Length: 294
Image (cartoon, rainbow, N blue to C red; front, side):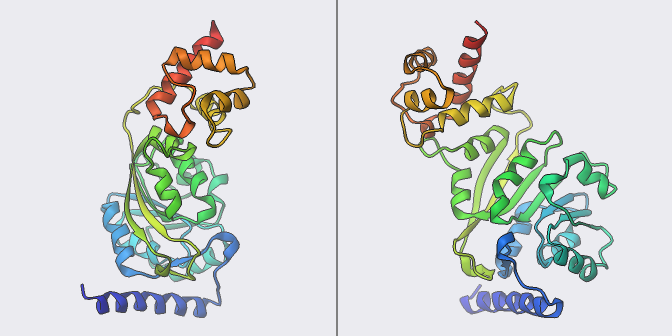
């Protein structure tokens, strides 16, 4: 595609977006992280990455003006879109009323139990995909919401802040609580980095499209994920400090006890939390739990 053609396609969606805002008397709310995608090439990439068919049930969070929503309705069997902003929810119901496969839920996604999400749409679901341009301020909670749910998605294709995308896909050496959580539940990849100019209004940061495919079977056995992540949080409690210090602070135990735990796991106390792989965290946690029972 010629650069001029690409610019024309972007201008076309930008003009459409600003026209929709004017017609509806709406404006983006910064406090809700509303930045509308105005690049057709990026829109197309999100859709192709999701590999949608008429058999798919799709859940979208933060639909905004419904540009992505409309394309989802054209490709998927059912679309459930959750919008916390009353104005945008009303606008969506009115503007996309011709799509009978669409259900607009005007609620906070984090306050809806996952089974209720489908019940409200009158759907009995055993398989679904998440496709969304996520509001930045709820990215991590929304990812955990879907990854920790008993009913897992088949795939997640989401637009997130660039720094969050790189955190999600981080290798040992740059690991975080978020990246470990994602890795426990699924395999992730950055599909494409997306500059701020692809949105209206432009955010202060760049974004990225991330694809997450949940595992059918987790690579590590964690029987109690809540206890596991409480333990991991203790390890990350003192940023960039050695494990022997961060665990001593986070667990409230002596450094000698922490050193004994690390020695039993074969992990150097001088290492830092971000350098441990998921497998090392799981191994260390199991030894910690065994020590509590003995």
